[in-house]
Image (cartoon, rainbow, N blue to C red):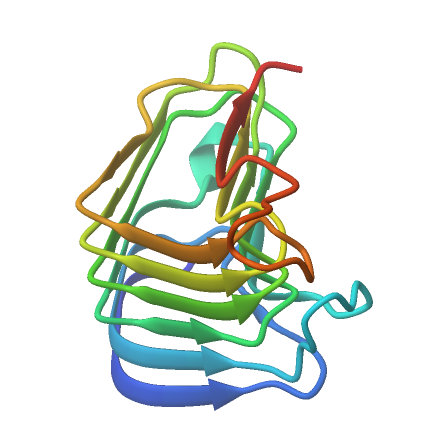
Length: 168
């Protein structure tokens, strides 16, 4: 199991593929740039970072992103849960720019999402900046959202919620 990982001052540029964190625990990303080739409105690319959680002993948790940039990804962060697992993920002073969706967490009922997004910036996000299905305890604070959830419309006419918490 990958754990106790620290990555700093790096740049990932994907023309295909993504960073898969499945199974990772206790990882820190500081001043890392994740960039792909997404064009606003396109829906064919993959996520910049993705993982799936289905077993408690290998769940992705205790991950911190500080001062990171997520640019031109169809989905910047995608986490898919097939079991209700409590996880701890933190984003501090991160920048999400020109993405189809910022953070997507597909959770399960009664799941503890100890996710924190603080002091971060979301700009030119085609769909939702943050989209969470199921779970509780997500905290978003001191962050800015510009031109998000409006598809190809202007800022005055959003077509979706900028932050969307839904129970499925």
